[in-house]
Length: 213
Image 1 (cartoon, rainbow, N blue to C red):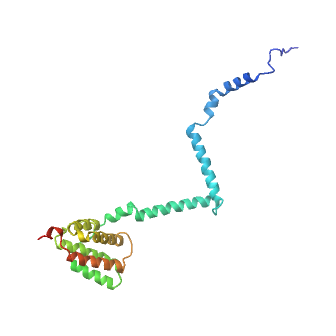
Image 2: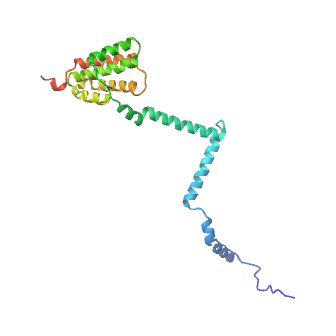
Image 3: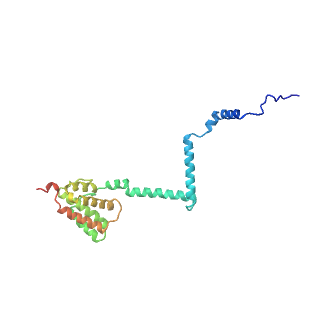
């Protein structure tokens, strides 16, 4: 028969000894490795905050969390559409369009074509051809060279340096042309009349280089 001697087994540990034992145990690398690092803690906190936010919003939005996600998707689509129509992408697309496509006609031909289109209620064509009449007339007066590939903005900027009294109106006219021809907007009678007045004013203006002659 084996007799166990229990006199050497401690039955009571004082407080300081227990604290030291616990501290030594926690310094074991297996505990340290199991703890999340700083970035993990930040990510966990952000996830908890997002979850609280979504839960709070979903309580007042029909469809719960799926309703919130649908709203977010619709907002993203709306932002993309607005940027495409009015942002830098749209401006770049419009700025790349030229005034003339194919062979040029005379300014008078463009004026007649614009007047016929306006009389028939085709204001898209009327706006396009009336602005072309403006640019073509400037080319015929040698205020612009008959250069291929010129955009409406470029024509307005170049002509505006020689006809400063109508420089702002030329820029506005170029914008009307681009909006209709490249931006997909409908032409209006007001836009056509604005370009007709611009055409008449440009015909009366003398370039600054010749003002003193």
